[in-house]
Image (cartoon, rainbow, N blue to C red; front, side):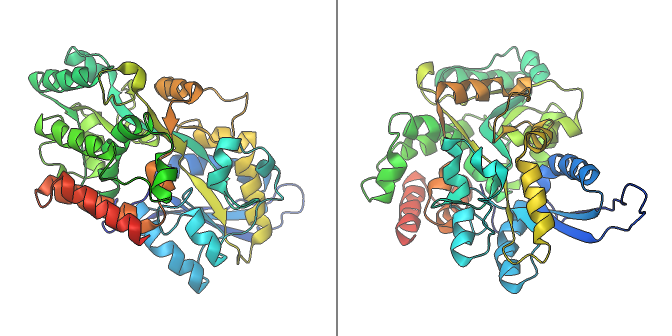
Length: 418
């Protein structure tokens, strides 16, 4: 998923330089400088992997720069074109944004990773987001989901339980208000957050009943306006009108929403699973859980967005290709996958028998096993403009500058242009 015009974190970027001296008797200084750029939301995971990589490769100095999603997606293509990009960098799966794999690969920006061992172990249902044709261009790092992440304590405080149906969800909103809380903190001042609630709803209202929807959109046989996207948006509005969200979502940032959950003002929020680590960092004592957002009164219909969330590419023009490839191989190994996901609220994108999932992810794991997950919707859209339009239109919807019909028409126009 991508973010656009506004900045997720106030600005840039924290830099972590890890200088690792050589082992053994030589006492030689580091000879390589491997430059990596990663999303700031993945900082904890990347730091853990980099530290382990350094222990195995003490001759390599690793310099990691972290940036918010907006900045990464807006600057990476230009840096690649100008020759100033890092050796390894966050790349988004599928299509969907300017820094997505299928956007960068046609321009020759990504190195072919097909010869690395991990490429032969990528699961079948993940290959489409890491490959173009028969060639692999990204290391999938984690498998994530979108759902309602909540504090167990806050849920107990309002006398609630995880809802199984739409009516139960609305009743839970009322219980939260009666208990002096809001059910979901919603920070759509941060543009990429705008998409998460209707993604969570559309998994059921669109893809559960119309699994070939993305294919039919691509062939012109389906539209946003004449589909379950209308229902998802109407329910998004209904949740807002019911008082389920923050009192002023357009003036609430992602960071504020994290604090609202951590400090008990909100029971939870609708987010990607990787945001679990942000709450845990802010309030280590909180016990968290997650549920798929119901969109109908038939619990058996509920689906959940689940897909590869973070992936990394190697700069095709890197001057440090050997170390970059070595890092990509390490990240794709069982060790790298498990370290990346051990504390980040996500699952390895390349499964193995040595990983124990965080109990918070129990429902995501259950939906994955049951086959009731659907890809993140933007990964299936033809170009970045559709998602960009989505961000804008949801903010317009919440500000009263458009209605559901207007949102759907704008999305169909953006899709056709793509």
